[in-house]
Length: 402
Image 1 (cartoon, helix red, strand yellow):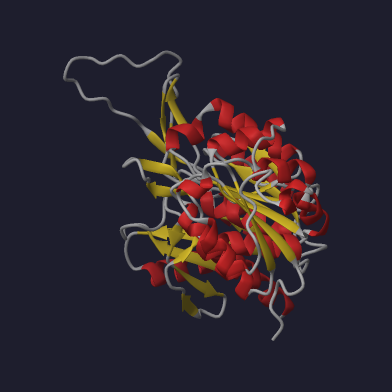
Image 2 (cartoon, rainbow, N blue to C red):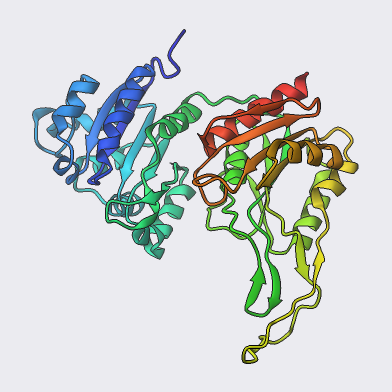
């Protein structure tokens, strides 16, 4: 079987981060996948990983300084740029992102980036506060606007001891991004996907609302991968901290009623609806115009009304559409998923136990069971949500062809 990246030349750019050790594993995976890999290091990367390690695994000299050898002095980095099929910067620190976004030079990696005009994949890694800083967000947005592909960092314990988004994505996920860029599978061309994601917010008064902890990660992963595989994608999203995926039509909303209207408006023209959004089941019957004041120890009583069941309503109207629902449950997962699939007239449902620690809401991974119309339940192991997205798209395509 031919390796996926056989015959491809990849330049791996490594910047000065504690996560640089993961670049060694990424290099190993790229080589195993058939790629011919050249490594270019930033000025500080060598403080974390010795160039000799990359040289031994890649079989090529490593560019570390701009004028350290006869090869670099004779503009070898330009010649590499001319023959490279892809540049992967992993890890990309805040400083490196700034250099790349502003076109600054001064080290081998920055110089190479300026000389290179092909596909670029960037995987940031840094402290969560740095990742959230407006200057870093602007640099990321600027690079995206120029066509750079990003593999977002994961959330977890960081080298500084804090917990939050900033951990370098797993090498396998970066490899998958490289495969998607260099050998894109376009098996969803001609299909229009309508995807919902994130939570909804139901206001109580001008400063308070009812909501849930959905991060939107599952829906955004599905939308991003469907777009990369050639589908036309409309993403209807409640409020999240995520950047809209590249190549999708993005429709933001807040309340369940707003999401209902957008789904109804776009359903007739879609081929596949994937409803991952955690739509609130209840809304306040009367939203106060002014902030509710605390009245001593007196309890606050809210009267709630059920929201409209978006998924059930649109599924009753389907003609050619393939409709996929998600079921977040705390007990009797498979039975509850089967019952929801039957009652709502779905073609496929994905259930997950949100009471299980470390999966579901806010997590980068999940453990789900997929149930089809015949009642077959297929439990999947704990997987990154990006991996679940790809497998689910495969399953949808298979079911539509059956």
